[in-house]
Image (cartoon, rainbow, N blue to C red; front, side, top):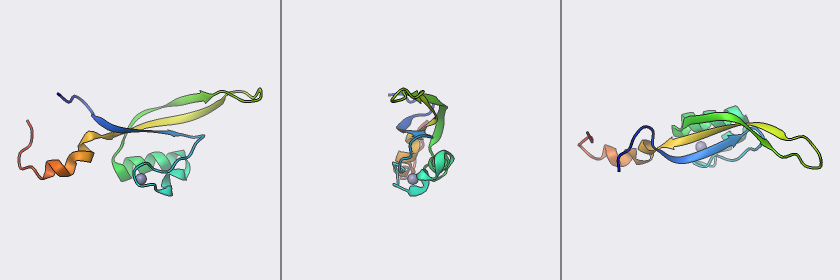
Length: 93
Ligand SMILES: [Zn+2]
């Protein structure tokens, strides 16, 4: 199958209203704020920033919707398989 553009192996979704541990290394770095989480994926795991936007969650008990900033990051295919490629003397053309 031909591969065009940036091939993404894994997608992560980060939100200012939720904090989750890094899916790659379970590092606590990603709990240090939205920016910290984005920077961690970019620098520690070579993820690419695919999208930044907003999303809303329905308010409960008559409260207004909650707005949050979200980032979607993707892990390029090449990084996951780089070690296999490095073992090959030939570069695909
Ligand atoms: Zn990590």
